[in-house]
Image (tube, rainbow, N blue to C red; front, side, top):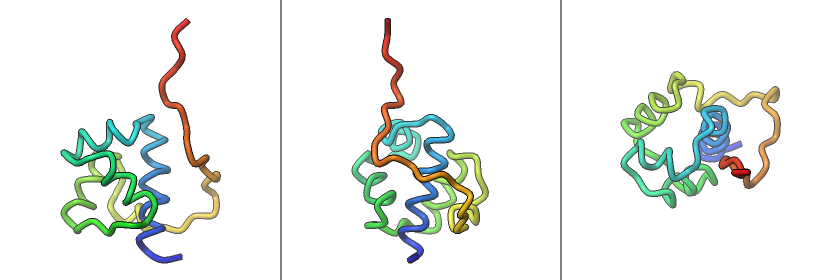
Length: 86
């Protein structure tokens, strides 16, 4: 697996763990949701400074964004993180 795709998979995984939407993560990073989407799809390689900022927001060490773990469950392509109001 190439590093950009591995980084993207892990950003998405940890973002879901923090129950953040792409928009919420983008806001915390002062970036656009399109930028987050490109990172998560492995289409963009952020700078080391941005990787450090992403890891801080997601509350993980930067190296954890590059670990290929087979124990992670496969994530769906889309998840509704907003609960339906009743």
